[in-house]
View 1 (cartoon, rainbow, N blue to C red):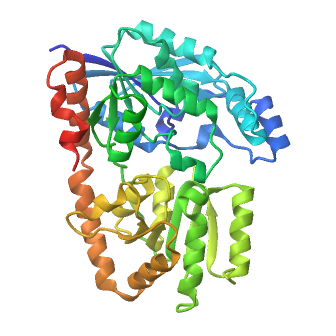
View 2: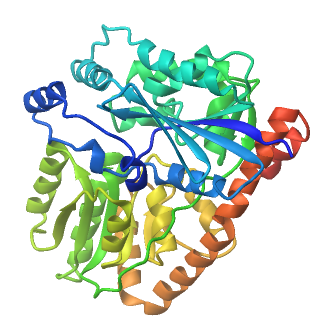
View 3: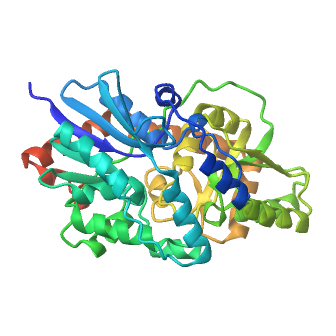
Length: 432
């Protein structure tokens, strides 16, 4: 039986992966962080993009596919580190830290005067691709040009770009300074690539606006692997957790809603978990002072290991995730899987969670009063909380079964490679 050979290009990190890599201390990184007053970070201790790890774990179980993962890692000792785990081949390349700081600096001064081309990264990636000679390339993260731009150099190999997010979302400008470098590279990739993996109508529409000839194929992301949860006493009422807090993650909204809830329940608590920049923290503290919430809001910080984060999140009774930009954020799905009754916003994706049964409480973006009312409903009705908990776990069990999700992805790979049955996977045919 012929094994299809697939290259997966992505950026992720896990404890297992880091144990195989050697990194060095970067003096340049330390100096720049000191100048910019940024906290020092240890790339060798931080988990991110866990959906990629779970995708790969599912690939390990399949005998009909040979998977090669190409990924960047900052400050590696060698240019390329290659190893194999459970039949999956890994090719990590040393990503130049200077790219991140150049873009960050230009974004800060709002003057993008250096035409970043990521040529060294692109050459390394394409050297690896040529050695592998795959049947197909699956890119995760067209919004990240420091590695995604490499597909623009690929010829005669079919490429599918799976959308983690879309940087060219017009709403993004409402919440953050956008990088023209990322906008332009993502557009180039969307114009160059033929196949796309999408899971919602917003991404389907945005891709079609840039590339009317795009073939959008429906598939979900693998769900989060739930670690063994340590049962502990509930310490907080609500939790808002994110990789990094900001306006688009609803950090300020959650504090404003808490202020309303406090009028009825003076001891209500909110735990804000995740990275938070000095500027966002300063704004959050101003709100906390203004509404006399010093004893009600707690900042926990960032958990480098994802399993530790999830265990901490369950110290709260409910999740409060008033996201603005994400279709359905990963934190929403994780909360549902953990059985945390959830208050969130109406986005392009969240209403689909309630199509069959009510799984989450929804309010319009910026409707703080409705959000606060939903929080109070949860606090006052154990029956409501239990119903949402049961329905959420059932929804995730039905819709985020990793085996089925990855079976579908592999079927899509085969349809593209052999040019048979592609129409069966078209987004408009398969959307729920």
